[in-house]
Figure 1 (cartoon, rainbow, N blue to C red):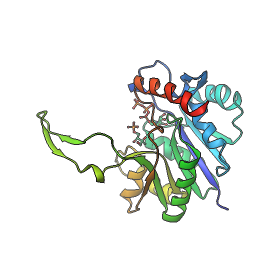
Figure 2 (cartoon, rainbow, N blue to C red):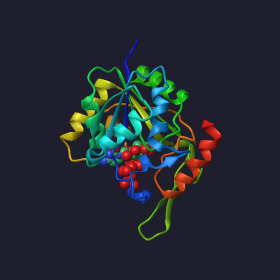
Figure 3 (cartoon, rainbow, N blue to C red):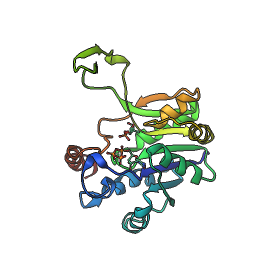
Figure 4 (cartoon, protein in one colour):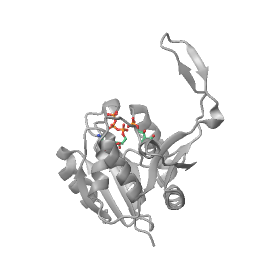
Length: 230
Ligand SMILES: Nc1ccn([C@@H]2O[C@H](COP(=O)(O)OP(=O)(O)OP(=O)(O)O)[C@@H](O)[C@H]2O)c(=O)n1
Ligand SMILES: C[C@](O)(CO)[C@H](O)COP(=O)(O)O
C-alpha cells in the first residue's frame, strides 16, 4: 500500500480577508477553520501523515490551540512557511521523509471531503498528478485594459481549480526544486507540474469546497457548516 501524506498550508497573511487574525484561526461553529480542514484528512483512512505549514510566529499557537486541543494525531510536524504560497509548499515537501503520494491542500478550504481525497489519490497514482475543481457557473470574459470586453471564453473548456492537488511525491518535489532555481511566480501546484512537462488530471471537486478568501466567504462557510457537518 502506498504512503499518502497531506501538506496543509496555513502560512498566508489573509490580506483579502481583512480579519486582523489569520483566517485559518477564525472560528466557525466554535472551532477554528483549520480544525475542519485537518479533521477531514485525519479522519481519512487513506492518509497516514499530515504536515502543517504555518507562519513562524503562529507555530506554537497552531500546535496548542488546534493540533493538541483537538488531538489531531496524524500531524507529525508543523514547519515554517515562506513568503509566497509556492515557498510554503516547497518547505512542506522538504519536510516529508518517506512518501509516495502527497496531497497539497489550502488550510482555508475546510469542506474538502473523503470522496475528493480518495479520487485524488487514485488519479495521482495512475497519472502522476491530479487536481480537483468545478465548472465555472458564470460566463468568463477577457477584459481589455480600456475596460471593455475583449473576448468570451468557451465555458465548456474552463475549469476552476481547487485543492487538494495530488502528486507522486518525487515528481512534485523535483518540480519544486527546479522552480526554486527560476524566478517564476505560480498560484498553484498544477502550474509547477505543467511547467516541467507533466499533465495534471482534472477531476470533480465540489462547489462546497470553497476557499475562504474574502469576508463574504466566511458567511457562506457558516451556512454550509450547518448543512454539511451537523
Ligand atoms: N506564503 C503563503 C501564502 C499562502 N499560504 C496558504 O495558501 C492557502 C491559499 O492562499 P490564499 O487564500 O491566497 O491565502 P493568503 O495568501 O493568506 O491570502 P491573501 O492573498 O488574501 O493574503 C491559504 O490556506 C494560505 O494560508 C501559505 O501557506 N503560505
Ligand atoms: C491553490 C488555489 O487555491 C487553487 O484555486 C489558488 O490558486 C490559490 O490562489 P491564491 O492566489 O493564493 O488565492
